[in-house]
Structure formats: structure tokens, C-alpha cells
Image 1 (cartoon, each protein chain N blue to C red):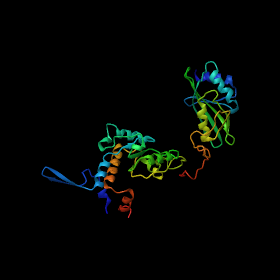
Image 2: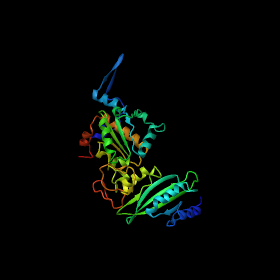
Image 3: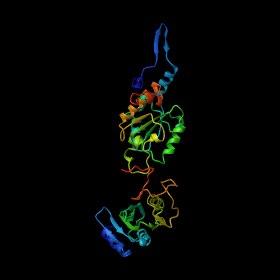
Image 4: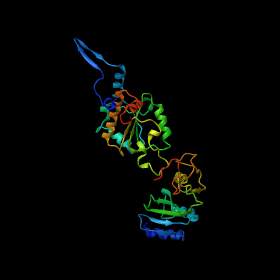
Length: 183
Length: 151
């Protein structure tokens, strides 16, 4: 199966709408409707460990405004958050805290690794004793955004990609299994 | 006070001091065993009034350590740098935390990262690194095969 079709952003309501006299009938799968609703209201956790956090705040502000895609309700508690954007360097001392925050989030939960540090340790890959070489050593990641720091547009693209992934209804493992990139 | 006047004053307090110029601030080299009486004078002597220690750090030169203290006077608006060479194999120096309280934290940081022992410090334990950490990570010969990827 080609997943690239399935993970493409789909903004239409998933299902068929049949117009009838005096109203209409909607045919859909409940799972698809839930995923459609879920993907349009993702609450991010206010979590940032360095300069990517400034860029994330910029995306939240008026100029870029991620509320256009349903990300505006930033929560200061993991219990109410759906998505954690790892914006910045994760050091060995921070790693258990990140794990704990992830564990405290209610299912379903999603993770975006923003920037070079969150992907691989970035500029701190070599010759340092304190930096985790990629946040995916600590928690599983759904979407990676390269950049140091990434442009606000890149973060928006990642958010839309995450929505597409949720709407496709596939799990991280299913996508990996089915992907043409990993035959 | 101008650098020339400061130099004159410092030589009066302690004849063994050496000076380095060329940087933004006057550098004063002090023998480590004379540090405490010298810096006490910095704070109290007439016309000096160095009441603010705004940076305390250490440099690893591989052959020795250099302790570096940056002082400023909020009254006279002059700044100086005091340096003291210490033995790398037995890094010990008197604390200045009884003269500038802020040194309590700054010295803990230097102890944490370089392993310099500050004698008579009230609470010398690790500050940034975990309590069970072994080694002094900012020393030039620090090795950590578990966490470090060498280039």
C-alpha cells in the first residue's frame, strides 16, 4: 500500500454526503470522524528548552499564528496536552523530566522533534558529555523538523504533516511497515 | 581611578603583584597564598571599593590552572581582573565567599566543573552535575566514553 496518498493532508470531511429532500445522509466510519475531529484540535504543551522555543513562540504569535490549524490552546500541564513539541536541546539531566512529561500526557499523544538538537543533538553531537544525541532516544517521535532553528513555516508544515498522519489513521508502526522507503 | 593610579595602589598593598595590560581591563597577577589579604584590601581600602565580584572562573592551561576574578566598584565605576596561578595536580585556593557572598555559588560551579578545592568554603558540593557524577568535565583531559563522541 502506498502511504504517501494516505498521509497527504485531507481537509475534507471523511465520508460521503448524500443530499436528500429535506436534509441529507452522511456515510462514514466512526474512527475516521474521530481522527478528523482530533486532528483539528491538538493542544500543544508549553515546553521549550532553548532557542527553538523562541521560534515556536513566534509561530504562536500573530504573524504566523498556528491557531489557524487548531494548535492555539497551549497547555502548561501535560495532563491536558495532546502534542509535545520538543523545541531545543535535551541534556542528560533533562531526559528523565522529558520522559516523565510524556508519560503524564493522556493518550492519544503525539511528539514533534523540532530542530537539529531534538533530532540528533545537532551542534552538540561531538565532544560533549551532557547532550542526548536525539530526543528519540528518550521518547518516540512522530514528525521531525530539520533546521537550526527551523523557520516558522517549517513548524507549520510539521503541524500539518502531523494532522495528515492522524487523519490517515495509521499508527507509527503501520506507517513504517507499509512505507515504500522501508521495503 | 585610572589604571595608573590603581597599579600604584596595588603595588603599595602587595609589592609581589604583576600587571598585564592590553585588554579592556587591568589584569593583576597575585601569588595564590597572598590572595586573601590582597582581595580583602580591594574591598576595604580607601579609593578602591571593589564591592562587586561579577565573574569568577578558572582556566585549564594543561600545565596549570588560573583562577580569574573580575571585580567592579559600583561607587567608583572601575573594573579589574585578578588572576592567580594554581597547581594542577593539587588545585587548592582560599575561598573569597566570606568577602563576596556571591562567590559561594560561583566557587561551587568551579569546583563542580574543574575540581578546584576552595579552602574554608561553607558548602562545597556539586552544583550543576548530578551528585553521583565522577570527574571534572571542563578539564582538558576529561574523557567520557559513554556520553562523548570524539571528533
